[in-house]
Image (cartoon, rainbow, N blue to C red):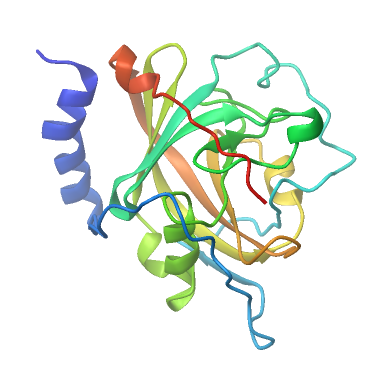
Length: 236
């Protein structure tokens, strides 16, 4: 019958694309170099693009401190296998996911994505929050796409998230939020959702871009696919 990723590739994704009218756009592979130096213009205003009416919110990178970020029961504090890989086929994004280092290496490293430990993991009834720098080979395609028509073309894109227990979760992007400055939106979310965050400029830029995605399905994944080799580079 084939593995779940095989069925996903050959049957589920084509069916979803036909049903949802999703168009995956190939953008070419990216190398791991060249930091982005984008800075929003003075005329840019907070913008939200979504598939249907939904709550408004805000955010940051690395995630901004918030008085309500203490871990709660059922979050990633050892309750659920953690996310290990994030793939956005339409944007050629494919990154290992790690827990953000602490101590002297607290600044988010390059060449990997990270999950916000105080929130949830895929399969939990709450938000999963994954973030990475807006640099080549990382989440830069999200930032670039967000600048065109407020990122409308990303609505309907598929996101794949693998977890440490060899599961693959499939999500659909339903909303794009730009120029966000707090974590309030994600912290207030009660549904099972996926949030992807990237920066909008060089170190020190407060405003961030978020994609919000809703779950479609999940199933078993190949162990090797779910455990990519992470090679973080500590960058500034």
